[in-house]
Length: 117
Image 1 (cartoon, rainbow, N blue to C red):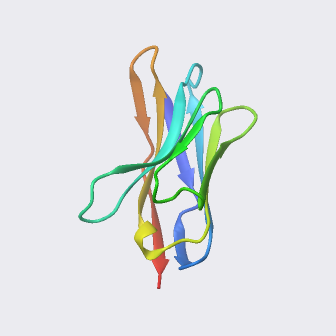
Image 2: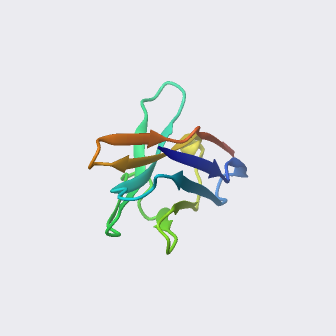
């Protein structure tokens, strides 16, 4: 079992920055990838950024160049640095982890990001 604990959400003005953190605990061995999704009212949940166990990253086109996903040296925590935030970035952000060996998928509780104009 894997537990994902998120922090860093909150209120920020347009053009500002936030950093989200997701700490994984429990049976964290052989996690293949971790990432961030978001869901705004009236919209489907979408992938924001992901990072594999090998360090490869990918981003949604809407955040490319503004957001950066990273991990710590122990590979048990991932971060999402969000710069130049826009009103359309406001959403509930969810941390995600996968362990393909056993077909496991884990989700965090979600954290609200609000952007004021």
